[in-house]
Structures are given as structure tokens and as C-alpha cells.
Length: 574
Image (cartoon, rainbow, N blue to C red):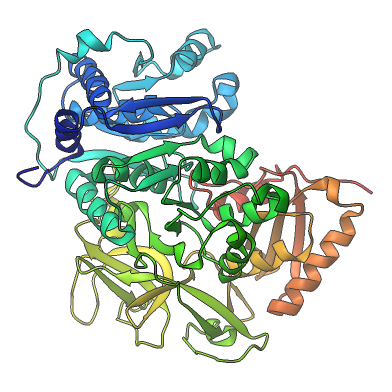
């Protein structure tokens, strides 16, 4: 390729010239067989068309919000923004048929990012035009429906610009567990550096084959699923997120059909497959080509990895395929990851030690044990420190602290939010003044160069002076009764009578229960036995009631707000 490319634009232009007919993306519209494909040459032409349209409409450096759902229109629009030197703002699109109820987050992001243009589908464009009062809400934007435009003529009008790696490529909005979304400012240099370490970690080559179902407005879906294949030069098959949530076996069927080597998702995805895929369905699968089954974005459960391996071994899945990793949008995506084809590692720790932020190893099998899966080794180009979040000193090796990160992948801060940027991206060690570091908000430790994540700083529940991680209690609740959905639980604390009390919200498959009180009794008993914690209140709700980020993480803050405001739709039955 000659000199090292600075942007994905240069990479796609190169592939279009030298690999014009290679398949770039395959999109399964129905999650199974109804496919659309695009080559590098056609992808370049259509991206130039969107780039030219944007160049005619707004100035370089302004923002364009992308309201396409997962598919070829999304990736064409995203790359079109890069071609025009416009800062892309990928966002989960509101549903055209339910605009009034799904628009709130979009409008908050528009208020913060202040884009000049929205790239969207024809159906969403029409819904906004005819919706009562909706045009007024979008009056600050020029709406550009990108389906069916004359790409042949427009592509000729595109004017190439010089690129500076420090310029912003896009804003990655992340709501985390708070109410207000924050736009992470990702530069071209951030993006290219993170693509390099993903390629190195996953061992990707132009002969790899990917399957991705994570939404493209989420960092793992966008960076690891949509852009990594373009960076490395291999074909990826895209499945709409909803199609997998409705029928998880579609994911594994696509891996089988296209002999995929690389695919993955959060831990809950593997849990859902275990719960939904039957032995007779499994026997029709071939997972022997799956070399990298990445797992990240939420706590990684050893039990899940072991059970998934055992259940899918008959169709060729190998434990060595699992690649636990750790990252976050503020670091573009990846921070650590295990080497390809190595068996993941885990450590047995005393729960009583975790309650005191201490790393106490154990070889026993007693109940006071937590098994923590390693999230991979540190990369040479990324620095990691474990820091006491109270005094900002480096932790001793046997202490658990906040994970701080520095390196070329660390984003420039939050868009239009200097105060939050200085707090999150401006960590300095007290004893040496070393910094700045990204303060991740995650708790963990490093052992033998492997990073272990133990919980979230903000999701710690303190009862009677002891630390309890919300996700540990959530795992216990999910196992307490078969009617509770996988990953369908949120645990948080409220202040009541001048002390913290534990509240549980659990999403229930109501057709599997006969008595509500029986479910609640099982939850209380399991939590008391496993954590010595009494529960103040339990709310059983319908599936989908728990607020989540675009990556599927539970938004504990919103759960608490919904609970306190009484808006939860609780299941009631005899």
C-alpha cells in the first residue's frame, strides 16, 4: 500500500483500485437468506456519492447524524461522512412506526452534537414529514434520504481532501449508566491505532471471514464488526440485531453457512444461545471454522464459557476459540485481549477479599469463591495502571482499584462537555504526577500481565460496610428461578430509613410461572445464601422493561429512576 494510511478513506480507495471485485459486506436482511452484497469498488463509488452530497450541503468539520439501522446504507453513509471530512454521529434510529415514543434519546443527542444534516432511510424521512409536530423537532437539520439517489453522477462530483490524523472521524455516543449521553470524540489516529491492535490480537488476515450482529452505533459493533473487516481486507456478513434477539440460532447458522472464522458479542449472547438452541438444532451446525469467539462489553462468566464449550463441542466448537477482551468507547474500543488460540485464564478469589478490595487467591471450592475470567494481556502501545480511586495512588499488586488507561487509542474527550472530559480523561497519579490517564470507572487488578475486571466503581452496593458488586447479585438472581430471563436482572441500592437497601428488578417469562410469590421467595433465599444480603424490594417485570445501553449494558441509574418514580410495569398475577 506504500506509505502507512492515515484513514479508512485511503484504505478503501486502495482496495477499490487493486481489489475492486472482492466482496466487502454481505447483509442478511431477514437474518437468514435474503442477502445484499457490495464489492470494494461499489462501496467506494457509493461512499463518494454520499461524500459529494455532503460536500454540497455543509462545510468540512461539521456533524452529520446517521439514523440508518444496521445494513449497507449505514456503512455507506458512515464512510461517506469520512470521505467528505464530516464528523459522523452514528445513533440508534427511532422506529418509523413509533417515532413519538422512541425519539427522546435521538433528540438529546441532536441537542448536544448540533449536527447540520441527518442521513436517514426513505421510510423514516416520510414518517417525520407526515408526523404530527415532528418536522418542528427536526427543524435544525437538513434531512437527506440516501436510498435511491443517483450515485453514478454524484460520485463524479466528489472532491478529495488532505487528511490529518488528529482530526475527528466520528462521535461515539455512549449513555453508559447515566441519563445523559456523552459523545466520545474519536480521531482518525485513534481509529487506525485501535484497528491495528484488534487485527494483531484477533490474528485477522484477508482470508478471515466475519459475522457481526451487534448494532453499528455501538462501539463493538462499529469498530470491531463493521470497520475491522474493511481495515484488514476480509468479508463480513451482517445480521440485523433484532433478528438475532428474536432467534439466536440465526447467528450460529450464519457462522456455519459462511464458514466464519471471527464473530462474538457480550457474554449474554452466549447465554441466550445456551437457553434457546435445542440439541436437535445444534446437530445441524458446524462451528469448526470459528477461530475467534470474542467476548466483552459486560462481565465475562467462566460458567458460561464452560457450558457453551460443552454444549457446542459436538458441532466443532473449541474452548480455545473464546477470546475474552476488555475495552470501552472512550478508548475507541479495545484495551486488552487474549492471544488467538490460547485457552482463556481465570482466577479463584475469596469473595470476602473482594468485599475489602483485596486480591486473595484460593485453590478451594468453598462457597466463598468468585471465579474471575482474565480479559487478556496488555498491549505494548497501551499503558494500564490500577489506581486507588480515593487517594489516586497506584495500588499494590494485591489491591483492587480503578483501571486507568493511556495510549494512542484514547479519545480526545467528550463533545461539548469540558467538565466531564477533564474528570474522565484527566487522571493523574498523586505520587508521581504521571498522566493524563483515562479513568474507566471499572475496578480490577493485573496478575501476570493479565487484566481482571471485578466490577464497576459506580455499581458497588455497600451494605453494612461491605462491598457487593451489582453484577454478582444479578448473576445469583438470574439463577434463582428458571422463569428469569438470561441477563434480565438489575440490582441497585436506594437510601431508605438512613441506610442503603437492595432492590431487584427481574424480567420474567411469565408463562413459566404459576405463582409470583414463589419466584420472589426463590430470589430472596438465593441472595441471602450467596451474599448474606436481605432484599428490600423485588419487582418482576415483562421482558424489555430494564433500560439498557445500545451495547446491552444495564443502565442502573435509569432503573433506579424508573423504580423511584413508579413507572415500572410490574407483573401481577395470583
